[in-house]
Amino acid sequence: MNTPWAQNGRKCIASALLLILLGSARAGEDAQSALLTVPGGEIDVTLPQEPLTVSREDLLHWTTAAATAVDVYYGRFPVPRLTLRIRADSGSGVHHGVTYPKGGGLILVTVGRGAAVADLADDWVLTHEMIHLAFPSLEDNHHWLEEGISTYVEPVARAQVGNMPVPEMWRQVILGMPKGEPGSGDQGLDKTPTWGRTYWGGAMFCLLADVRIRERTHNRKGLQDALRGILNGGGNITQNWDITKALSLGDRATGTTVLMELYNEMRDKPAAVDLGQLWQRLGLSLKDGKVSFDDQAPEAAIRKAITSRRN
Picture 1: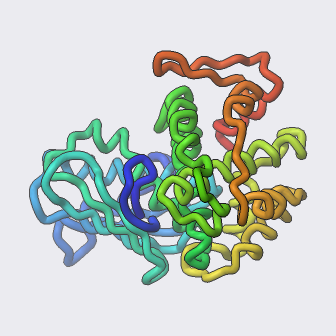
Picture 2: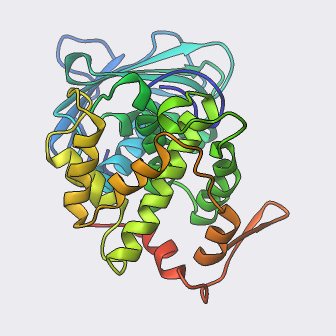
């Protein structure tokens, strides 16, 4: 996929207790491949042939960390078998990823030869790509929802499993959401395929949906339940669905009509969001780059529930 935090590209398991490395390499194969088992699936990993600063074990640990977040958020791994090909290029860090439905799920991701362990620990790209596995493929004018889900869920899922500190998760959300606000000439999410509206406009849709679902269900359910319902209804990346089918199934899982209502609000008109008021209700503020929490805020319990780990 590509990067909501940068500006490039398209689409884009289980802690040590959940993910097992089956040997150092499969029989008859070299040390550049490994098979990882996860709850409900497997990951077939191909590692770079070129020497990297990070080790094979570092790369597999990074894969495990990303997969843990996705597995916990969705309640299982989204596809029975994922093919993950890790490639190397110049530079450092993780700078590109893309996800395809081919073969039941294929992710290509690039790691710089000079990447450090810290770069892998801070990486969002692989988690973002794995989240794409958990939602059906939509028509081109609905890519904002696919990208918005990965952009919003990635830091939430990482925070739920401890891969990202909760204050950092909210700091990134507060800084990122204004990029999704409609600008001059905006015609709604379905008709304004800019970078900001695709990634962050879609993420804003997800945040609003999460809060509204929790408001209507007295914080018993949220967007996580809707997305689990879509996945458990067969909606993974290998399927081509109409957007209304996906949103209706998500609404059914929460017992609300929030997703379809919000889609009708934002699909073909600008629908600006008062983010300042939203942060105030959730008990969030950002000053000098530091997030502060107000646990007396009207919807502080909703804020806490969003990053709480679910069974």
